[in-house]
Length: 393
Image 1 (cartoon, one colour):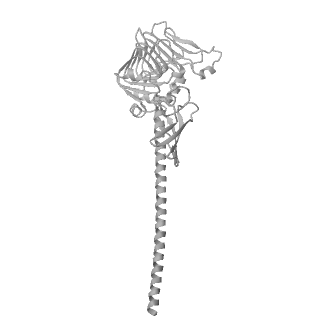
Image 2 (cartoon, one colour):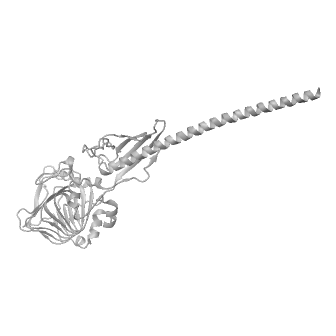
Image 3 (cartoon, helix red, strand yellow):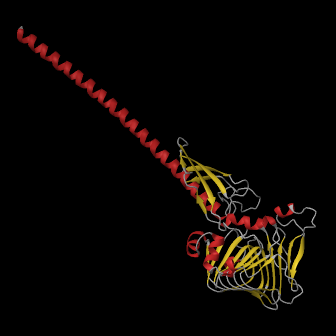
C-alpha cells in the first residue's frame, strides 16, 4: 500500500512538473514570438524611416542643384518647381519618386522677391507611406560683388578716348573715376550724361533705376564735375588691392570660392555668350567679340535685353582685354590689366579697369550705369546653406 502510494505520488509530481515545464515553454515560446514580432516591427519601422529620410535628403540635393543654376528659369519672377520631369530644363513638379519612395518639396522665397534667400522643405515618404521624414534648410546666394560701384566707369590708370565713348549715369552725378589722366579725345560723339536736375521727378527719380532724364555734363571740350581724374587714392592701389576694394577678397580666394565658369582666352567667347547669372574668370589676355553676356537672347546694335530676359553676370579678366566686333554686357566687367575697347561695345551695369582704358579711332563704347542690374548680380553668386538652418524631423 505504501509502495503504491509512493508511486502515485511520484507520478503526480512528475505530471505536475511536466505541466509546469510545458506551460513555461509555451509562455517562453509565446514571449519569443511576440519579441521577434516586435523586433521585426521595430526593424521595419526603422528601415522605412531610413527610406523616407533618404528620399527627403535626395530631393533636397536635387532642389539645391536646380536652385544653384537659376531658381526662375522660366522668367516669371517666381521660384520654379524644382524637378524637371519632361527634360526641357525648366522645373515642372515638386514631387519626386525615388525608387519605391517619394518626396514632396516646397521652396519659399525669404528675400522679398529677390530669390537670394530661400527655405527648402522636403517631406520624404516610405514605399507604403507608413513613415515620413521632414528636412528643412535655408539657402542663400553669396554676393559676388559686395562693394557695388556707384559710377559707370572706374579706372586705376588713364582713360584715352581715340574713337567715341558715351558714359551715362541716370542715377547720379558721377561718370568716370580715374587714378590718372582722362583724355576725352576729339570726337564730337564723346560725352558723359548725368541725371537731369530739370527732370520733373528729380531727385527722386535717381532712386529708381533708368527713370531720370539725362543731360550732357562733359565732352571733348569741357570736363564737368562728373569726371574725377588723378585721384591719388585710386592710382596708388595695386590691381589686387583694387580687386579687393570691390569684391571683398583677394583674387586667388575669390577664384577658388566664387567662380562658376573658369574660362581661358580661347574659350571665353563661348563661355560668356548668353551667360546667365554666372561669375566668369578668364586667366590671361583675352579678345572678346560678338557676344551678349547676361541676357538669355543675343542682342546687337541699339537693341536692349528685355527685363524678363536680363540675368546679369560677372566677367573678370586676369590680364588685358581687347573688345572687337560688337558686344553687349549686362552686369560688371572687371579687367586686372589694360582694356582696349576697339569695338562697338555696350555695357549695362559698370566697367572697371585696374590698368588703362582706351579705344581706337574706330571704336565706340557705350556704358550705362544701372544699379538694378548690379543688384541682380546677387543671384550670380554660389548658393550655400545658411549655418544652423538644417532641420531633420
